[in-house]
Amino acid sequence: MSDLTITQQNKVSTSQALKTLDEICSDELVKAKVGALLLAYHQRWSRQDFTVLEIEQVATSDLFNPETRARSRTFQMAGKKDILLDEANKLWLMDHKTCSEDI
Image (cartoon, rainbow, N blue to C red; front, side, top):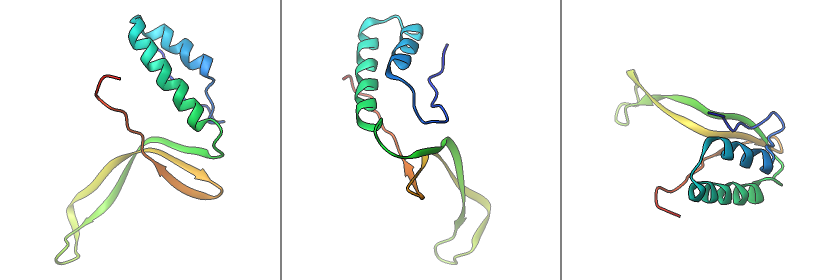
């Protein structure tokens, strides 16, 4: 199975993405839906001037007791950053969501 990855230049051509989709999926309805999502995503974000720094990286932070303000010696908060990007020397976290409903 092929992976669709973002290059160092933060660009993946639409035709490359659709070709990859063709290789990994045989259901025409699913391909049409995913293709439409890819095209809309590309239309929305392809002209943005930012640099992707990280994709799907784990982020951790200390956890504090709200009453005592003491740091937990046992637990940490953790999660995944969808995308960390740099736009004009400012760091932004971008969170992507899709829906589980039929489209």
